[in-house]
Length: 77
Image 1 (cartoon, rainbow, N blue to C red):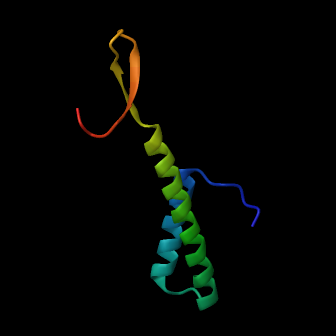
Image 2 (image 1 turned 30 degrees about the vertical axis):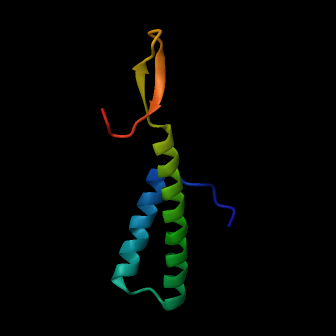
């Protein structure tokens, strides 16, 4: 599938559509399997995007010389 990667928001919206379709239970088995596989791929993509975003979150503190220093944002503070 040569489909362009979706943004996080697009992937989540499509994942919500897939869940709704599967919950209805009206799709034939083969279509349900394809939807499930697509949903699994979207979940992995969303997880990867969230992991990357989490890695970018940092806090700035003043260093000994007064210059800003980046530190991981670990919830303490």
